[in-house]
Image (cartoon, rainbow, N blue to C red):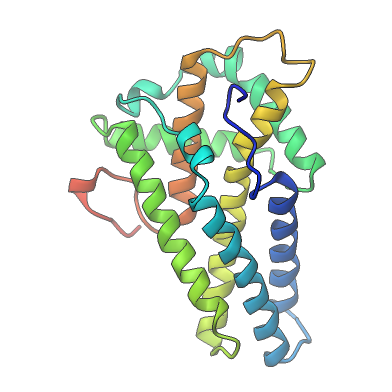
Length: 237
């Protein structure tokens, strides 16, 4: 097993990239000035939802991925590095991972890392006592909800305009989640590369990365909900 966990057998980087590309094509063809008929749009959306449903289901069942991303039992605030730590220990690792994602056709914007850091820091500031294990469980719950909604839409070949809009919105959420699923896989690939083999990945780096990934999973799966400890309950933004 690599420093960031095993590369999954069912949910591979190539499969993630393929579903990501399918969703991109579907969203383009079913929105804006699309000339497709309603029936053609419905078929495309149903097919994309079906592929996303299958991938999310396999991902939720992949114990290697989830056990490899379980963070240590401390507060989220304790796992948020300062800017110097990011620059010294984490930025080079993430830059290599983003290059690997792009090489496989999974686009990550240049602003993604800074935006994700800010989201995590904001959550840690709002909920200083929230623990990493709570975040982990919340992330899984958010993915289950997203998976169930996508799978439901996959079974609706004929949709109303409102359901069509909902399918596009949820597929866009899935796209963002796919980037997060890919990160630990490409981090494992980067860690095994000749460029990184001589660099020891510390327990601290693994834990910080796991918290980062779980926070992004929770956020992207349900972006309308504020990330908060269970007792606070869901909060619609």
